[in-house]
Image 1: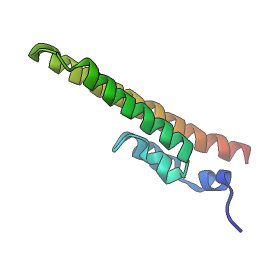
Image 2: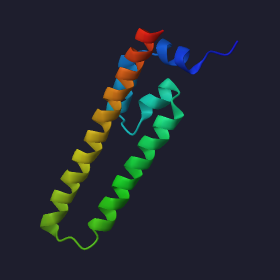
Image 3: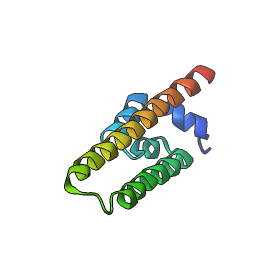
Image 4: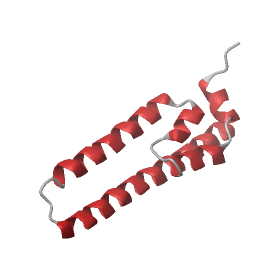
Length: 98
């Protein structure tokens, strides 16, 4: 018998999913949880953030380059924080409902 999506999520360690979404970032915790839709959404958002940074920073001077890199890093850290929080809450929600 194949486990359901909720059973897989409930069996996963929430702290591992949170850590994997923070440390390597970019939704690696979703791969651990086998939540493909959330992973692809996170990947699309990170890709869009990189592309936007590259397009907007094309003709930037040297002083603006450091600021652009900082804004890019802050954006990726915010994405990692949001996905880590969501991954932990998803495990908690499934365990409380099941």
